[in-house]
Length: 279
Ligand code: RP5
Image 1 (cartoon, helix red, strand yellow):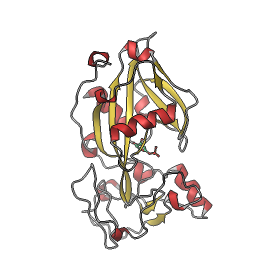
Image 2: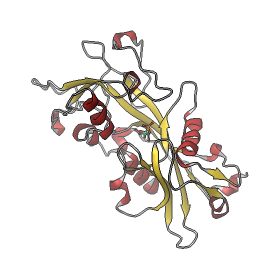
Image 3: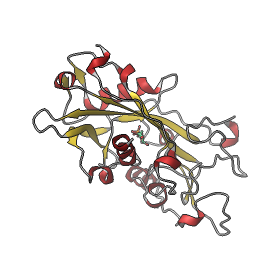
């Protein structure tokens, strides 16, 4: 595969504050992930987020009566455990340090729990995330022009947990490079094959940082490295996948990018797509 098969320009990589236009995270304050509700329900726990007004999201702004519910049900310690789940110890003080794409330093609360760099979420503990602090993930944004209509499209999945449209992606396994993760995940979730070998070295990092994810809590949150790759018509014509999706996906499809698409996407994926299109 030669570089002329791809036309994916380099773009600067913003962090979350820049991606979100300086607005505080919204999803992580207002939505509770369906899977989190389901797992908590299996333990007879009803989950609710304490309301955090915009002006009080920042940890530096004092919020005298902030008493959010604590949910600490790392999936790997529950009956919903999946292969590869490897929960951190229950005591966050056991974790020496946190490596975040979003913030150079992660502060801790009086119990040693890491503090979400995007601010308060109205929920304490890890929720259903296995790790205290950042959980690194990677996403792959494949783009093509529809061969018949010429409309710009992206390969999206429907997530099994929330049903929302999302880029194929997933958590980085130990020892894995985000580029490897993104490629592994798109294959796992869509069954992707390509007549010409897809060269991931041409994928361009478009975003690195915090994800406004419905699983996030004050002490555990998702971060991602999102890479995009534009496929020229000859390469795109040789790409095949299963429309039923697989693994964490229940469907996969080339999806036309129109004005409404970003608003229908999971977590920060719509914001990332908007950014790529306007960068
Ligand atoms: C999002 O969660 C990331 O952007 C990535 O798409 C996804 C990873 O979580 P799983 O798909 O592994 O649940 O925050």
